[in-house]
Image (cartoon, rainbow, N blue to C red):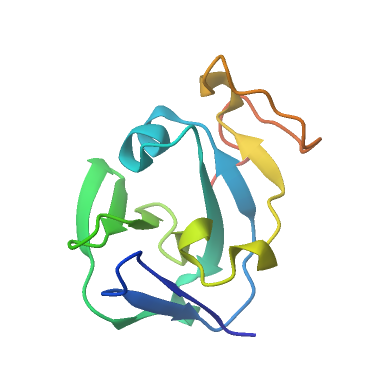
Length: 134
């Protein structure tokens, strides 16, 4: 299985050679603020199976232990990497060419969700993180 994706303007492209592990909706303030959305959906991939195939994204540290990447031309958020989880890379699901091909499994940082967000999908919710990262 190979999943491909990229930014809105097409300057950045990526691919992953495997199926995603965890797919989650994150309601934390950092994901909301960096995406401009009520929550952000991530798919986790093994880092060794993920690569950028076109263009070079820009990155920044949203916290000392977290680096996020985005397209420098159109601003599309692309990836999330944690210092304590070097073997994984999280990819924004809606930057995938076929985002409907992956299915979210839960909601994390549910305690941080906006008061007007009403969840009706029946997925499990976690007040903060689901588990300790690898």
